[in-house]
Length: 116
Image (cartoon, rainbow, N blue to C red; front, side, top):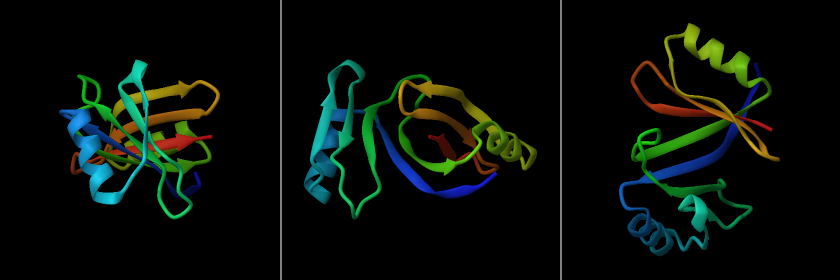
């Protein structure tokens, strides 16, 4: 398992429109809304971690998840579980982009794994 670096930040909000406005004003982020997903991508910036802001739902409670790039998603998730983590969102495919999963670390923090 090779953990490279943080690859994505995901902000899940109780009121996504309010949260998007907050971060746009706070950091000057330009957001591109994908209406079908109620998810806004942060416009790419070479000096910032890519990410997005979405609406909470039963599978995605409000909060922030940082995704770490790994070379083998299943191996990394299995290792996290061996160390006391619990899977929160099983691995799934983002068509044409990669695969992702979310686990809860021993303190209950939501951490994501990303594989290109």
